[in-house]
Length: 415
Ligand code: HEM
Image (cartoon, rainbow, N blue to C red; front, side, top):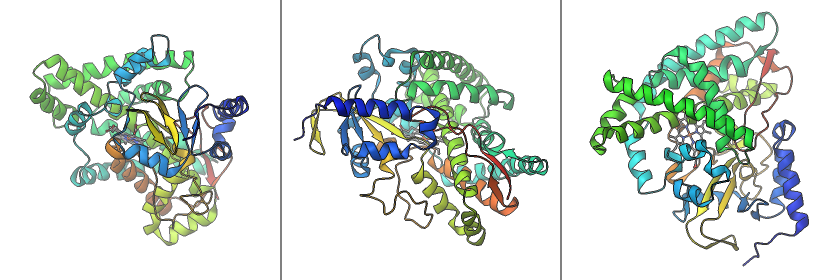
């Protein structure tokens, strides 16, 4: 068994590493930091408590095991009143699907339904039309110079897809998207007080928006998912206010989960395409490689770099003692570059057998993965087929984060 105490020098190294990782420069290339972290072991103590996991098989094992839990409402309450976990936005997010543990998680996940093949085909037709419109705008911009692919396409497609599916008026999409960018900090690795305040304000506005939406759908039901969830929850929950609240949490989380993550995937995937002319030639010659290209983009640099869990009981993880209630941070971005799992992990290779944890694993496996894949594959296929060859104008700017990657621009031009 390995001791959990850290030498002061390791502690200082890790603190300095994370403060560099949290900057725009660190986010532009976080992978050298992950190499440094991996050198401290597959499981290393986090300076603020808990552990950092960098090994692929360790992360995979934690995600699939019932010995590891989500930091749920009870866990957050135990952390005390003056911690990030007591912020109103943290308490609110703790009541959404990804923060629940069984048996509550099982019940709520079942009530959400899934994106079956028929639904994906229906949404797919609309995604194709939206992509064509957005690429038309990119084409026009390119006539007069460069185009910001992130703003014109990556930010627009996810909100148009999920907004239409949830039957949310398009006039509300820009504000909702802005709020999702603000609320993300409560789910970040080390949010500061002003970021938490932004999350709290965003969450309060989202709560009031979605509760109104649920009440409006209850009065005027349609064929949309929110109306269907009301029907489902009326059968599960005799108290109508509680049923409405359950539907609110589903609709809220679907919106939060679907926007930034997918926008980041679309941008990162396009960045991989335009930064190397050989990749464009490869896909143009072999469009069947599109799904594998998307999966490799998800491995190479996933939209979510950190997933957290807490130990259900005292246990040993890779020989390190972890106590019940201690948190582990699965450094997914690092795990995806684990040389013990991947040959030449730093090489972007769409011929690789796809394996990654970008959509998590086990019971919390991303509900929207088929939708994210649909959007990414459709965009990539249409981009190659329709646009002239593109090149990167400048390296993109990155938001200063750790867990949720965000490109702030993706400027392209005709090659
Ligand atoms: C590239 C895009 C996406 C990425 C990288 C992504 C990533 C993730 C990850 C890592 C989790 C699990 C978190 C955990 O284990 O604690 C998750 C859960 C979830 N995602 Fe996604 N997601 C994406 C798109 C979407 C979309 C489009 C939707 C909705 C339509 C969605 C809905 C959900 C939901 C509802 C959960 C909670 C599942 C549960 O806890 O049972 N996601 N996603």
